[in-house]
Each structure stands twice: as C-alpha cells, then as structure tokens.
Image (cartoon, rainbow, N blue to C red):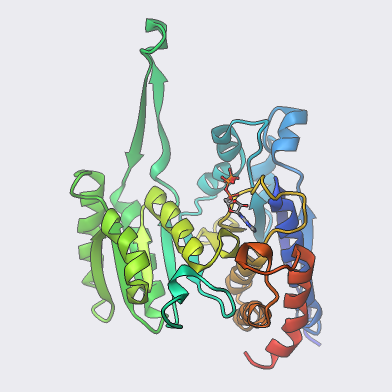
Length: 365
Ligand code: ATP
C-alpha cells in the first residue's frame, strides 16, 4: 500500500467556545482520516495560547510561537478574547499576529444555507442560496497604522489616527483571487464592494484595480456596489450573489450578516489563506468566543467543522471536503440542530450526528 500522508496540524482552541468547537472539528477530522484506509492521517499539536495563557505569562502566545507554527501544514483555530484582556490586545497578540506575519492575505468565508435550518430569508421559498465572501486580510482598515497622541494636553484632548492602507498589489491579488474562485463556480460573477464615493483614495484605487483585472476575465460577470447598497442586497436579492470581494473591515461585517441570515453565527466557516503556500494557512469559524454560552456544551460546532472541510480542500482532499459538507447537510436535514438554529441538540450530539453521517455521505460524493 502507498505510504500514509501525514498532515501536521497546529491546534489553537484559545478562548470561550473556541475550545468546544475545535474539539468537535478534530473529532470529525479524525473520523475522516480513520475512513481513509491509511491514505492520510493527521498529526495534532495543541497550543494553550489565548487569554488564560496571557494571565500566566503576560503575552497571548509564546515569544517563539510564529517560528514554531511555521513548520505545520496548517493551523486550526478556535476563537480569541476574554474579559481579562482588552479585545485589541488579545486579537493583535494572537490571531492578527498570525494572519499578518504569515501573509494570510485571502480570507474566504462561504455563506451556506443548510437544509432544515430556518432563516429569515427562507420564509418565502427554498431558493438555493450560497455565496462566498472573499475578504482582503492583510491591509485595508486593519493594517494597524496610526497612533494616539496629545493626551498630555489634559483630559478630553487626546487624538487618534487609524489609517487604512490600500496598495495596488494588495488590491490586485485579492481581486484576482476572487475572479479565479468565481470561475470554479456555477454562477460566474464577482461583486466588488467599496465606499469609493466617500473614501476617495484607497477605495477608488480598489475600484480602478477591479475594472482593470476584470478585463482579463471576460467570462465572469461583474458589478461594483457601494457597501451600504450591498447590505440591502444581502437581504433583498441574495440569489444574485456568487463571489463578493471586499476590504478587510467591510467583508468582516458582511460575513457576519451572511451567517446571521443563514440562521446563526455558529454556522459560518472561514479560511485564512496564504495562497503562495510560503506559510501555513489558518482555518477557523467566523464566530467569536460567545461568552454568553461558553462552557455549557451547547454551542454550534458547524462553523468549525465546515472550516475543517475548507482545510481538507486546502490539503487537496476535495472529495473528503465535500463529504464533510454533505455530512453537515445530512445532519441538519435530519433535524440534528443546536439551540441557536432552533433545535435542542448539545454540541456533542450535533457533532456525533455529523460523524455518523460521514459514512453514508462517503459514497455520495
Ligand atoms: P467576541 O468578543 O469573542 O467576538 P461576541 O459575543 O462579541 O464575542 P460572538 O462570539 O461571535 O461575538 O457571538 C455573537 C452571538 O452569536 C452570541 O450571542 C453568541 O452566543 C452567538 N454565537 C457565536 N458563536 C456561536 C456558536 N458556535 N453557537 C451558537 N451561538 C453562537
């Protein structure tokens, strides 16, 4: 028999429900590997970085953490943030530290409407809805440029500058990525989102780059939409969307809107990709630490499990990725739903239902 391919995965559950959903995703991935007849296996290393680590060590991750992570095939991440650490410290200290330093410039966030899950948009009919938000993940509004000053002038006089960075190269690579992704989909269309009427420098550069790159993809339909109009479109004409490409902040907001429309924040998956593969990519649910339900064993594991499917796809295991997605859909169609999407299943029951559905979906994909 051929040698087993072993994928080295760094697992960083971090905080809140991150711990619960990463455990669920690992369980599904282990089941997929077990069914592969020795074709592949996963070698897991878990890191205890996050806000508890910060309480002990004063930092969010080990000082040589990035060096350590470089050797992994990918990173499987939970969620970061807790009340003992200011949000901007925890986010920059761990998640953004990884995405920025590993140049994970493309953030892919599919919005998938699942069978058996009722959404506000499902009221009218059962139109098939699924689109992908492609988020610029390395610059834009989250470039971390700026500063605070003048506090010496006394209370009420401090100023802050938060500068967005748009480079032509940064715009071009994410826009090109979106077009290439659109070519792989049934509906070949890219919607570009900016606010170039009000933000006349960076976002006009984005718009012009979009128009230029679009010329190379005559087979892909395009539209340029202002961010406010796109918010309405997500709700009024979602069937018109296929690939939506936007800057860091705008796409961050949109993907939450999309997953809420699909039924819950707990459903949305994401991949932070370094498409050149110079660094490991990172896979994580879109949702945060959900402190209101953390530790109760009731959170929805689907966002994390669907992110694990994106990781399989990244490893070149496309059939297995489809198998996991099909197992999710089979479990929701059978009514195995956590509370956030109207059911009564706890995290473990929902995860086990997906694991159980894996064997029946293997034949189907
Ligand atoms: P953070 O500061 O970490 O982003 P947050 O509460 O602001 O936390 P989320 O963690 O994304 O943001 O949670 C927003 C809402 O969505 C909460 O009501 C939470 O319970 C719910 N939610 C998030 N993730 C899940 C999940 N996996 N299952 C069920 N509900 C979830």
